[in-house]
Image 1 (cartoon, rainbow, N blue to C red):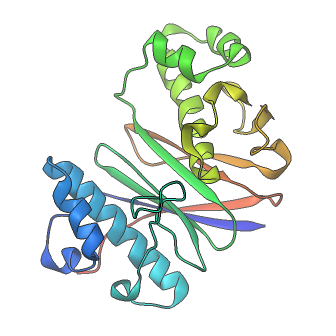
Image 2: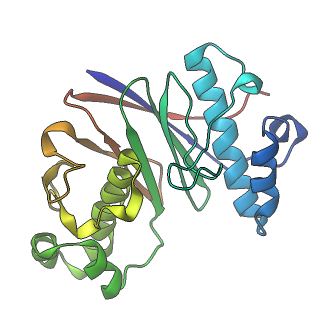
Amino acid sequence: MIECGVWWALPLTAEPRFLTLLDSFEQGRYQAYRQEIDQRRFLTGRVLAKTVVGELLGRPPEAVRFDATCSDCGKPHGRPTIPGARFSISHSGDRIGLAVTSDAPVGLDVEAATRRADESLISYALNETELRDLAGSGAESRTGEFFRYWTRKEALMKATGRGLKIPLQSITLSGPGEPARLVDSADAGLDPETTRLADLDPGEGYRAALAVLTTDEIEVSEHRWTPAV
């Protein structure tokens, strides 16, 4: 059994005690965002990750340093990593999420329920099998059921670390109303036998999913996180 913890947070304010947890490169990333809400979401994701991962590794948040080296170009703008933990950060609206495992690749995706899905997005993300399953949905539930597919697929992409290098239509997921699972994959990087999926509860107004690349079953716990006073 693989234990996977998921933490949900609201955007932090730019207090000095949070900003000092960012290293020099993270400070640059933070300053590069033009919108305040984007700065706050980035800051929250890093502070949340350093706090939770630090507890797992027995370190204070200020002693946690991530390696964000891009595997393609070698520059420090890739997915943050650290030896001893696997984690994934996602955010949408005012919801920031962190998923952590100790030894299995993990991916997390959260989306606001207010996001719209036009036909071009649906046809881009879903293959013929999934489109047929979605066609049986009522008009009112169609968007919500599409984003179940979307968050599950995005979580899978993040777990592999390859992102959209894996075409979304190359993977087939279980249909609306069924437990989340990978049914089939045309990409060698994803195998139903070594993939676990779970739908999450990020709170009213949001949808989210988790993917873990493992042959074991997963046990997921969700937590609401607020910084210590």
